[in-house]
Image (cartoon, rainbow, N blue to C red):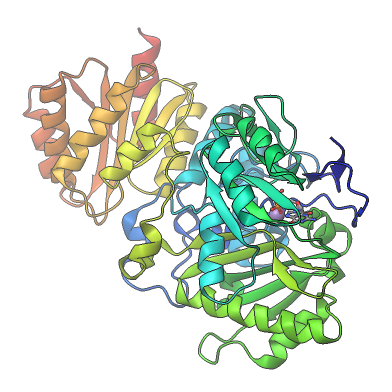
Length: 526
Ligand code: GDP
Ligand code: MN
């Protein structure tokens, strides 16, 4: 089948529209104001955010921040193995926010240290899946419920259902889209051999045949791990012709102290490349969150995106509706690429990626109930049940830590001392003894783990609780691997007494370096 625009596969379509490489959700993958702005790099709350901030929950460095990998060589090949849900337009990574700069530096540093590469790539693969991720069809439902124009669609989880949906749509042309949390689907390849995660056809039967080669197979895109991500659902939508693809995102930007509209008349294509080669084609409108979006701002953005005549008002109206939705649902980012124009004069959101402020969970229960965890590692889901953050790596020393910085520092120091972390598990703040037990259970269930390094800084955390949790876990789980513990901070003396009086073979370490040396030695000895 010929490929139209390199992104979407469409059989013999004479109406060849603009050549596009549409990688809409892709750009979403990297910058992640939600990510960069959070946990790992210590940025505080977004303007609307309430309640305890990320820090208190102690996401791992990767935490919500997911250090997306730095561009290895070209910006278009960001190697985002799993862009899932980390929808920050990557080009924004180039924006001048101090947090972004800090994040970039961190990523560069990580990239420069060969021993960390393995861990980094692993972490990158695993980290993007730790907060609310909605599939495109879920985001589009939210959009259409709020007056934003999207195509009519159905969702199917079998080929037969897809066929039925295609018939029911009764559309001139149908677009079939694999639902995975990564972008770049248009150019993806399925493990069934089928090329393209986005297909256009006029024949419902073809929808059935294509869906058969999608559902149950892995789809690999630029943003997924090499083996791809399993497709469980497809979207069957009414296809519309696109005469122009623009890019539109609304996000919380720390450097603007609030929401910002970001747009480019050249959407669909790799927005990063546009940002790099034609930065003048990226437009921004900072919005005062108290005053809300002004008509003039929406109009100016519509104009900058190249919408002319009556389309300008329509686009401005859509932009305002998207902004209102963004606020209403506590999003940290709404990204639409392509934000397109049809030959019939309609402004339509052809793709959608929304990120949420997870501190708003308490007031966005319906949305958070839609969380699609199907792409998570089972162990991550298990960890999440106990409010623990688990990141799998490929070494043999399990790291049990609290907080993002400490997690990274622990991994680093293990490497520096010649060892390799098997994972890290972030306990966060507000720890309960039972959590410590569960954490040990998870860590020891991994056959790769040959030693455990506990590195806890008791700021909010009370070290004695940790110590009690550790001794309990050691006894009940009959721990078989060496355990090195470094505790510091609140109530540390009592904690040390608990450990030393426990009669358990626990190696105490005086500081981080000592802990790393001892844990590496305990593995080497074996
Ligand atoms: P992505 O590759 O994961 O970003 O998925 P998109 O939903 O953005 O689809 C990729 C590309 O397919 C877009 O950039 C469009 O060029 C094209 N596409 C998607 N939906 C339609 C449609 O309804 N009609 C046409 N003509 N093209 C579409
Ligand atoms: Mn897209």
